[in-house]
Length: 318
Picture 1 (cartoon, helix red, strand yellow):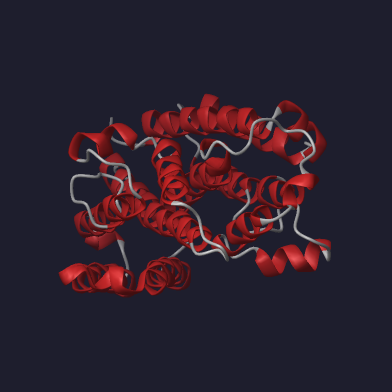
Picture 2 (cartoon, rainbow, N blue to C red; picture 1 turned 90 degrees about the vertical axis):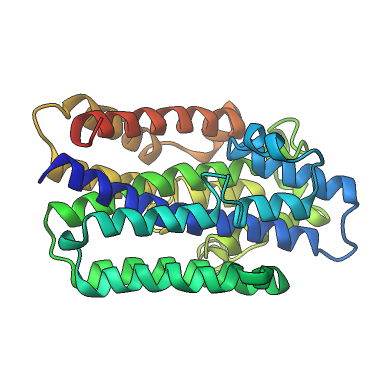
């Protein structure tokens, strides 16, 4: 396969996954701001800034905005054409990458992505999305689910499919780690001690919102059959391979595709990915928390970014 084709397929998948994960993160913010009793304007602004920090978007935001507010951050991350990581730009880039390799896609997949883009423009017209934000975020997630389902159900298991799956796995690993780390950037986590005690008051609702945002609330209940605690949420979303959106599941999928795509240049990237996969597979949540969740996730993001750079150098257009 031409590296340019692989590049477009890889980024088509990454941008689709990025749009979905951005919607999931914004949905957490929205749910948290609507908790019983509510939050002060300052607390909402702090939480909004946390989303920018964890997404590495604060400098881009401050170029065009003088005030940090929840509403302006939501608009920036949903519909701002100057934000390269907004839902608008992510779905636009996904569609443009798909259009560039139209011949490598099935008709059903192309039509699904094209319809997503057309419907998005309708929903952004006159700020229609803002009148029912939960419904809009649910729509973004639904279209991403539909895209992956059509991909799985119509594409042959060749290299084109593998680059799509590789992009999805890499982006998911990156975004789930960032989503888990949002609480640190809100400034409410100062240490990793006494995690279970933090389930008091609105902490319970925050971690429940995280679980719902990754479609993990019911899985948590079936797995632990007990009250929600931060340590168990972290365990579910980091270490459990049976949780579809966990770091473990993402690394399993990433390594599975890398093995099948391996070439003469990819040995080091495959080694890095395999080592990270093994360290998560054989880790224990107590060890993760002893290291510090923020420190652990920061290290994970550095390593997954290095793997992404290796994939680019080994397979894709420079």
